[in-house]
Image (cartoon, rainbow, N blue to C red; front, side):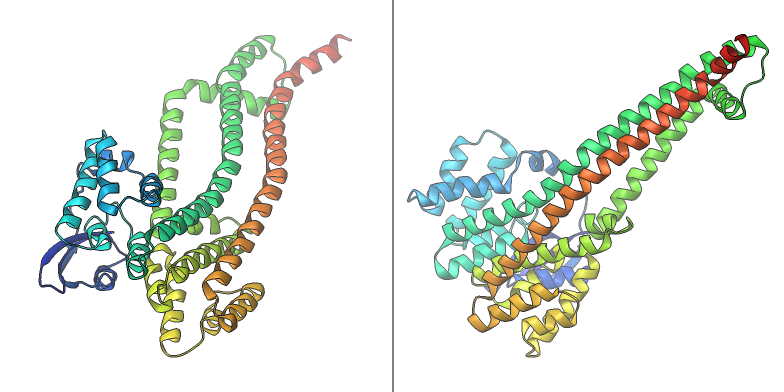
Length: 395
């Protein structure tokens, strides 16, 4: 849910912040992490006019272009001015102009980004703020781009694996609907004129075909309504718990979803730690990105770390590790390279997820094709079964 927060900055300036949060307490916590004091929190009003801007705004493209300009030797202000000069979309120009106005007013780059939370998530603001302490913004931008490439790569594998089965199921359903709604009623009229008794299954199919032909409009409206309700239920599930919660409803997928969430947690946390952010601050920054169950575990782990518990023990006590990742975390704690070990753990799990997706698609797609073939073949056989009986009687 989106909240509008009136906040007071350390220099006693009042600012308006709009952000995504689970509840009012979470909104106050996120504002406090930005170094602001929340004075008033209320649900955000409808965000008109931002949809068109969000369609043209790409944070990854912005980061890539800004990184190229900074690497070439331009300052942040010069880089933003160059991006503004080449931009034609008015919505994106407005984002860049607000960033430039904030920098010219003497604000830090992270503070200017925080004034537009709709376009710059807390994670992005956090790595920029950490980079300001080390004066190494290009490296942090490169680290964020690598992070997005890894996350989008896993998501792309899942989407690619789902496209072909969805198309196959759609085509198979359309063929089956055409056979039952058009072909079967035509055969039913032919068989009705012969006066011969039909096999039981063929008779059931003919009755259903006549019913579908006679009530085509109500059936079509009902199918659309069921599809719309299914889409709404899926969107509601995704909104409440993310894609992971939706996939976990499928039998046998819960363990894989947990591995995926661990991979995302390790990758994000590792990027923040390598960027110079402290462990507790990094864990608090990514709470809003996790599913409710994972966020609750991460919150308990953060409290344990603040109490003096090592990160590996805190994660292990809250179900945020596997035997392999636990060993790698302990090695990272001993060597002082915890961020790198978290990133390597994420790489290990990304490879495991990729291999599992490949195996799943190789098994599921043939099974789906076989299922659709059996359904269509059964309809065709039941249609022609009376003809076979007639041919036997003539012989």
